[in-house]
Length: 239
Length: 239
DNA sequence: GAGTGGTCTAGACCACGAG
DNA sequence: TCGTGGTCTAGACCACTCA
Image (cartoon, rainbow over all chains, first blue to last red; front, side, top):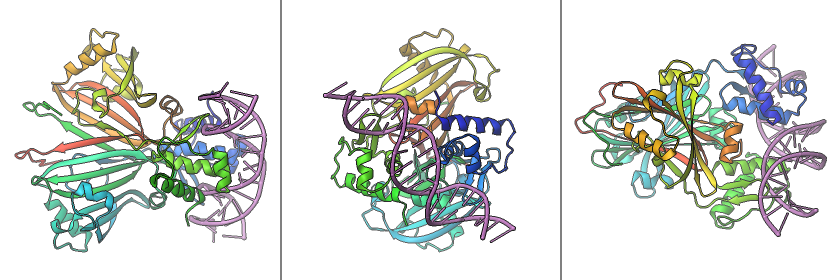
């Protein structure tokens, strides 16, 4: 027997897919819906959280719950197929960047293969589509590999793109989790919504780690795509 | 100002990482913890849900909350690097399989490029490590490509492995979401915990879709790894 | 059967958004 | 200011686990 929140979620899901509730439309308030389904507000909210996780409903604090536009998911393209992080996304996105020099975070010294507290250039990206944030990226570049780091994001983009050709390996680790409180606030998503967390480490032909990127994407509006092609003469003989 | 559930989660997280709460140990009951932190049970449970999502705490219905063993995450290896789904995981896993012939689900006819309701061989895997489920996989193979489908899983494994060499492309789409009620029950996870959802489509050299796989992995105990290597003479000139 | 977590209620109060 | 969602309370009742 399905729980009440699943029954409510199923009903609303059907109303949305059948067009009874149109895209962009505002749902009745949570109090009204709770009355209609004769449940408490907490139960109704957990039902909406399910739909939110499926990308069908968007909650806007102080304003209401809205039926999401037909799912226009952002797709992150993996495998280093794109020259830089932000162009790895399918849609043109507005983005803001902030560049600072920081000491290497402890959790990164191993993957970056640098001594602790060594100087790094940190680039913090937030990508937007319209008003709604679509991504959050922390990119770390070894300081000596980006010698004359200009404070402008565009120039960073160029200099990072220059590093691309000698890349020999890109390793991307993907996991699903709930967002931290800070991430939820930045991405304007509910703390109950899953995020896609990507850790990308790029290595050049000399075996040095050129770049480490931590990306956080809201699960309801983003996914990642990895395409592997096999050459006809190539055989993945081992591993 | 952090919310109460985050304060509680932070405190418990610190007690775990400092060894004050040891791995495998049972936490006090939710009622006791709620009293200690002077919060309601609902608030305390939402704090535990955060830790659960981080893979630090495991809830067992009717038994208690337990500190998870030092994180031994399952890693799914992408890129078709492994000959078959189950060997794509890092740890040796016990798995059970069920093979049935089904009509093509509507959401798969496009990716499999087969007419609607055409016969497919469906293989349903559940992988376990000890008692706890670690993965859920639906694999669909076009019926005419697996002509003499034996009912035994091991033989399926062999026949699928035979298909490997002529593969030309593996496309894997990864997303993060909350589990369906059914998935949560099968994987023995809370409905509030994020899952990693992978859709893998394998194409052979003739351009035919050989296999479609839908994998669901619990976010707290699994992640996916994609490694891309660049040949020295190869250049990803476009796209 | 005793104790545990899972679900749910009927409120309260706060934070945000738009007029 | 008013209506909205966000957080929280102090319970209730049910389902599960284990002795």
